[in-house]
Length: 225
Image 1: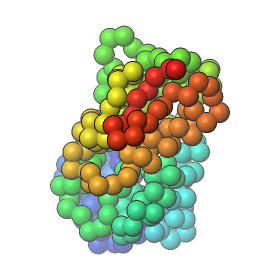
Image 2: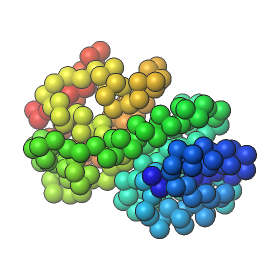
Image 3: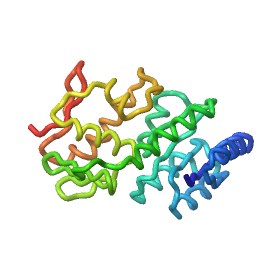
């Protein structure tokens, strides 16, 4: 894969660059947010790895501006900030996943595999998924509601695809963790609720009927009432 790594700590950047290169990835390195944003906007990357605290422009702002270009490239945030609010800010900016420093290199590789696997999974025969006026095309990675394009991150797309493939069926948080997130993900986290809210804002807030429903104590279901 072609990966953009934006990291200002020289030792961390050198370690990650060497490790990813040894895994046969092509890695471009930027030491500040401004250069990182310029490279990201040029496109052609399969994955962006962004440190949160960067000189020039923060990783969160880089993430926001990349997402404003309507690109679905997976974004993994690296952060020394482990508080839930900090993680939510990263996810809200458009990141697909986060990793708190210090971390094991093998965990980074696992997160990368999970993100890119979901991005490149080929849709089975049948193609476009539909519920009411919502359509999702796994092949082209495009979503529309009432004919309007819906911008989704890679993780939001994976979650929506899972919900649509199980429409009219209640899926639990454990089901979602196992199918959409890496199984090593913190099961005590509220990240699933955060992403469900992201989807609701994009899919249900300005449209009717509402398609994403919560069953308290049971999970979530996508259906047309």
